[in-house]
Structures are given as structure tokens and as C-alpha cells.
Image (spheres, rainbow, N blue to C red):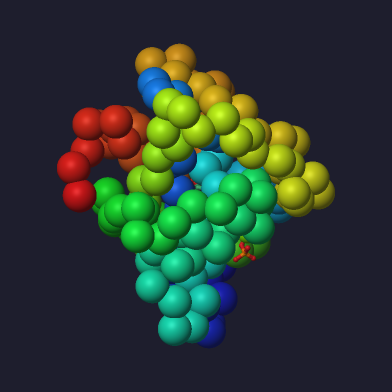
Length: 148
Ligand code: 8DG
Ligand code: MG
Ligand code: MG
């Protein structure tokens, strides 16, 4: 059943690319537990998408990404209807890249929320993907080809 006061929330997620790979981690969360998802989280009041993306990447991986180099790729509308609760997220997919000479590695800063980060090729994504990410992939989303 829907909660009477439920509202859509904005989620900013980041496709952090390095060469031919993208960064994913296995979630530890009541929503999408044990599925692979992008770093990201909720847009805070007053933030730009780029600021939110940089903040979430920093909070979750320890990596400092310049917000000027983060770009908007796609917007999706996601409804999760569970037995007891419904969630409605507007998903803002951003892209940031590590250059080939940048050898910084992500740290698992929030080990209670993520099993750890790893780099995956788009043709060989781990399963299962977090549902909104799976949907985007099935709809043809590809952060290596998408242009903002
Ligand atoms: P915050 O408190 O740091 O703001 O949030 P979080 O604890 O990091 O939240 P999250 O669950 O990682 O992200 C917020 C919501 O974003 C999540 O519950 C559903 C939505 N979301 C998508 N797609 C993705 C995705 O690929 N990765 C992540 N992390 N969240 C996603 O719709
Ligand atoms: Mg998160
Ligand atoms: Mg977060």
C-alpha cells in the first residue's frame, strides 16, 4: 500500500568510468540488498546535480572528483512497489572519468552499506544489478556512448 505522505525523491548516481570499466559495488541496504549499484544518494536541498554527485562519490569511495568535470547523462523515473512500501525515485545519471594516468583507487568508506567497489566492463556487468540500473541498461543506456 502507498504511504499517504510519500513523495518522489531525487537520486543522483554516478557512472565513474576508468578506461573501459565502470565502478560498481554490492549494496548492503534494505532497498536492493546484495545487488550491484553505482555510487550515489539523495539530492540535498540547494545542491546542484554535480555537487551531489561529487559529494556522494567522496562519501562512499573517498575519491575527490572535480564537479566541473561531472556531466549529466540521463534522467529516469523509477517506481519500486514492495509489499509494505512504495518508493518513487527520479534517477539522475551523471558521468565522471578517471584519466588513464590517474591511479587512485576507491575505498569502501561505508562498509555497512557496500561490500566494496570494483571496476567492471560494460559488456560483462555483475549480476544481479540494482533494479533501476538494470532497467536503464535494458533501455539501452550506456555511459560509454551516451552524450550529455
Ligand atoms: P544518502 O543518505 O547518502 O543520501 O543516500 P544513500 O544511503 O547513499 O542512498 P542510496 O540508497 O545509495 O541511494 C539513494 C537511492 O537512489 C536508492 O535508494 C535508490 C536510488 N537509486 C537508483 N539507482 C541507483 C544506483 O544505481 N545506485 C544507487 N546508489 N542508488 C540508486 O534509482
Ligand atoms: Mg549510496
Ligand atoms: Mg550516500
